[in-house]
Length: 294
Image 1 (cartoon, helix red, strand yellow):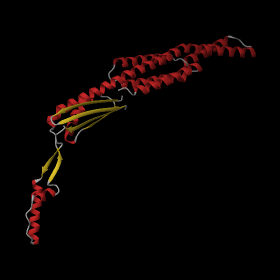
Image 2 (cartoon, one colour; image 1 turned 120 degrees about the horizontal axis):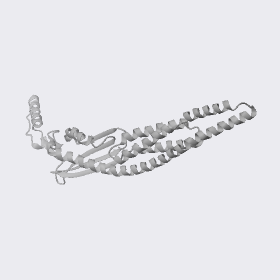
Image 3 (spheres, helix red, strand yellow; image 1 turned 180 degrees about the vertical axis):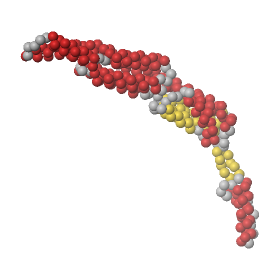
Image 4 (cartoon, one colour; image 1 turned 90 degrees about the horizontal axis):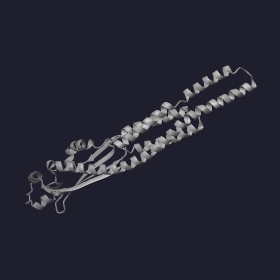
């Protein structure tokens, strides 16, 4: 599911912010972004977060800024480099036979690399616990938003399951009528043939019964309807249970689609076929929504 979460806090001279964002994805793709001097914390953060997410593209980012009035960098004097500059100058002056003039501090200030401004490094051990807690708090905020979206998705899915259940009920009512209609059509056709070519009725009745039995067996959808009812019940139970049922719902959607396809292959009736088409459309809508659930 999509979502956003954040947690901000201050520690010492730093203000810290953790932000989570997520989009739908079948598999879990958890990306964690940290400042370079805190990269060693990633395994601990990933371990603490992995129990909360099962799928989706989730990004978690930590940004750190120096507090107002605190310097974010420090000036470093490279004494070794300065000494090397001076040594080279003396060697050069001696080699060419000139007198080296007095070297001032201004000369060193202008020399590249003698004074270097670097980002003030943060102590990992000092920040470890607060950073881990910050990620947990932001994750909790992110999950709360997902739960709100999940409730809306569950309500929509329940309504679609109701629609699908009604279609399955209509299929159950239509199925025996299909056999009866076929029997009536077959009997009427046999009567028409008998009127044109008079013959005994014993064999006709036996033929009629055999043909009806074959058709009834070939078009029997009772098992498929039973499984559809079962899958619908399991789907509802998973929604009521909560948690992260996304993968199981995906599987049930596949099974619902499979049973509808089987019924469609047996639907020797226009009205029943239309019911199956409507059911397949509803299953596809359910599948699309189920993919949004973690």
